[in-house]
Amino acid sequence: MTAAIACPCNSSLDYQNCCARYHAGAKPAAAEDLMRARYSAYAQHNVEFIRDTSLPAQQAQLDMAAITDWSQNSQWLGLEVLAERIHADQRHATVEFIAHWQDAEGQHQHQETSLFIRPAEQWYFYDPNVPLRAERNAPCPCGSRLKFKKCCAAHL
Ligand SMILES: [Zn+2]
Ligand SMILES: [Zn+2]
Image (cartoon, helix red, strand yellow):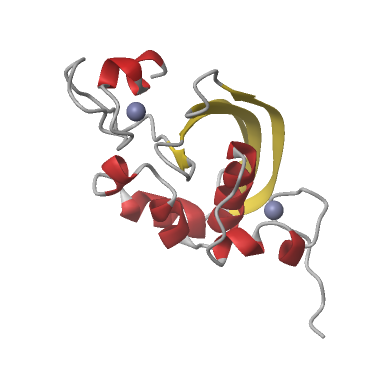
């Protein structure tokens, strides 16, 4: 038997009972769980998971070198999820959190509210550094097959 390790997301669960299943391919039912699994992926330098759980329309534009650098050169001290709010359309949710990490410059904590989008069955993280743009009547770039104005335009 291998020793249980605390999940890096700071849920107080063992990794095997928390984020491990998502890293193994299970799809989180809640945006909060995806938020936790992404934080744990940063802690484990699993940058493929960070890429694959970003909105597909944004993946090619992610700065993977910067993500890898941040992941590897930080010590990940834990995540606090403050609130999850699912929007009425069930396709968008926000997660308010505080992330803690340490690097050569010292300890940091960062509070943010992130947007998650579920174009079909699966939640994805919306990276605000890669804006989604489309004509209002064009198909939404998130992949939902709705018009942009009826989908993500109202949430960005
Ligand atoms: Zn976890
Ligand atoms: Zn959309």
